[in-house]
Amino acid sequence: MSIRSIKENIVDDTFTAGTETSGRSLMQSAMLRFYRNKAAMVSLVILCLLILLAIFGPYFVPFNYEDPDWSAFRAPPSLESGHYFGADQNGRDLLARTLYGTRVSLTVAFVATIVSVFIGVSYGAIAGYLGGRVDQAMMRFVDIMYALPYILFVILVCHFANGDFWPQCVFVVCCHWGTGMADHGADCARPNAIPEGT
Image (cartoon, rainbow, N blue to C red; front, side, top):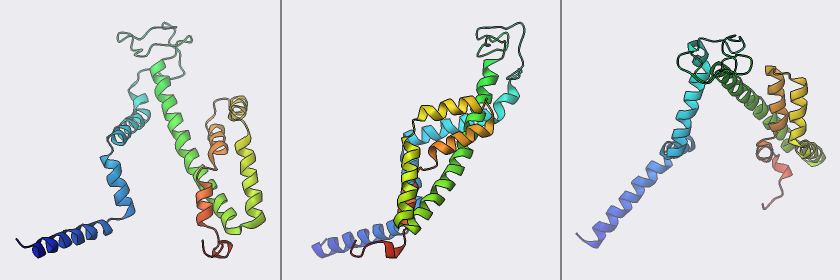
């Protein structure tokens, strides 16, 4: 085989590979990297199992999460009694309470994340589009929010929420609504606000 033939084959292979790469979208590339990451796939499987347990698990437990079993105060884990995780000091089944707590935690995380991303993106988009003093004022407000200690919000939610669902969602939203806001604010900046030559 001549050198010219080898070069032509190399060029053809390069062109074919480039064509395949350019035909793949960013989402497809991201999903391909995700599927190749073993740790990410294991985490996805664990998360799916937790979601399934949180949804369907309480229906297979013979005890309610808040009803006491008068014969099982501080009972250890046992297969005979049906308290697989044991019971607390009030006789409530710990497995049922764990599954119910998992359901509440995942629901709060999902709802609060969706709402906080929507608020954060909208807030950042407005700040980035208006720019100038409005942007500076809005960003200083965010700095004040992030400067407040996290433990302060924990104390407040423990005092006012009293275990209710919606106050917990509000608490998570108040703490994390600024996530990703700066990036979206920069993307939404008006063209005339960006100096030329940058």
